[in-house]
Amino acid sequence: PDVMAVDDSPTAAAIRRHEERLARDPGSLAFAQLADLYRKAGRLPEAVALCREGLLRYPEYTTARLILAKTYLAQDALGEARKELEAILTLAPRDVQCHRLMAEAERRRGDVDGATRHLETAVTLDPGDRESQALLSLLRAAPREAGEATGLARVLSDDTFVTVAFGALCLEQGCVEESAQVFTRILRRDANHHEAREGLERALRARARRKG
Image (cartoon, rainbow, N blue to C red):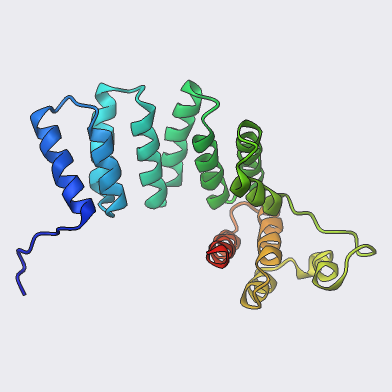
């Protein structure tokens, strides 16, 4: 096989066009578009380097900072992502996408209450944001009183079953919302519970697959 073969995919072609544009005009704002293409192509270190270099020239260019935050999230660099998102919210406190991403960062670090606050803000700013509403409903889920619960809900009203093992069992049985509720309740007690953080993310990925 020809190891020098050129990638002719649409993304690769777009990357080449933007690289050529930036080479002609190094001071152009096109660096943000190129960084986003790098991110989507999985070239994360290049995306970070390009954003950081561009932001030295244009520190208030929130689009570039948002792309940098998304790239940090893809690298699982949650602390760095939060710093960039906080900088954006200082300039644009009503940025809905930024609140959604901040909710993701907080959730992935185990801060369920922090994630809930940002989702509440996102939904207030954009009442038609059904995905944020659904996530908010999952993270807010509280156990029902045993007397008014039935079936699995009655089991979940007992803290005895709020364990990683039971959350994993719920997920294996296809009870995605119940699994997410278990892991969320664990994280409310201990935000640093690594297995619960991973379990909640698995449950949310399963939910996304089920929605198609």
